[in-house]
Length: 399
Ligand code: 3PZ
Ligand code: ZN
Image 1 (spheres, rainbow, N blue to C red):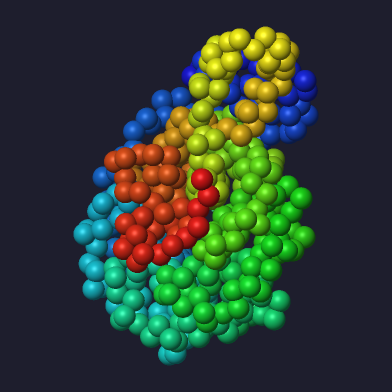
Image 2: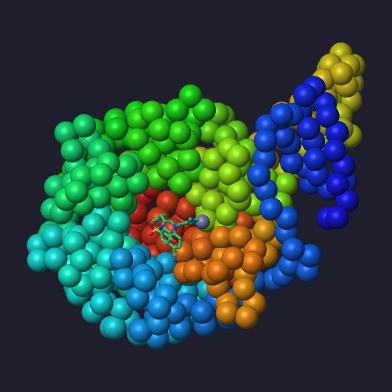
């Protein structure tokens, strides 16, 4: 797609390839974006990503690895989930991984990022996710972990991440995800947890990290995921939220976390998974079907009045429909462009340094976009769908 046209209709700029892909932008809204390098890759180098992840933890004294001690158990979850989606989990030593996770648990409490690190709700979720994937939850002190999470809940229903007391609805999601995976949601006050989440909803239908904070797509994922786990999606304003999420796509095809920010691979995940949960993933790439006037008129050939209205209003209608669209091919190209062919792995943007975090969320995003050479990912837990199915976990999804 090298040829772009640009047209202003009723103050709305339509830019896009002259074929069928359009990105709509309101005139005057500033946009930061990047340009995809020419000759960007067009395929997913799955075996390179496998090797990148398998080798990541091996050189234990390498700088990068030491730097990430405070992220170690999260990194293990990112790596294991990515390998699992690539159908390569057998590349790791299960016993070693489980022993490492066990060594991160504090007596009768939660998990730290590494042995002897203070317990934190983020590390505790990673621990539970890893053990769930390996069907090894029985090997830890489940009651201790549940009690740790219970103790993080505040009077207003919110959760702190650890004993320092920082509040953020990311921690609410971690608590709900952990306890639902363990079948122990009864250990907290779910109603007040949801009350707090709903206080973080903004006029645009999206969510910030605490009441009054600006909307951000990672927070949207956490809040929508929390509502899905607890069967409370009816609280959402689907049209406003879907609009806001769709507006995250930039002309490069990548998605940003909030208005005026640069695109980043991990936002493909926060945005796509949220759309999948609210049943709007099909808002992606329906341009060809919608764009054809003939297609619309075929359904009402005799109704002249309706045809007249349609003819005069057709541009307005199409512009509105564009707002709900994320152009799938462009997003896929953006994610593929962030791969590093030499080292394997995926970066936040083309040409940046790869890391396990963006490698997982790039692969998980491609899975949601329908790459059938990958295993299906569950949009709420960011774990393989087959693992969630096996647990017979019921999460609410709209359609
Ligand atoms: C990254 N963390 O605070 S972090 C994270 N970010 O621990 C892990 N997109 O500097 C890796 N940016 C890389 N491997 C980045 C996890 C952040 C998210 C930062 C980031 C991502 C752009 C700048 C917050 C779950 C858990 C934590 C987060 C999100 C979701 C950093 C900076 C921050 C962090 C780690 C490394 C490289 C990897
Ligand atoms: Zn990122």
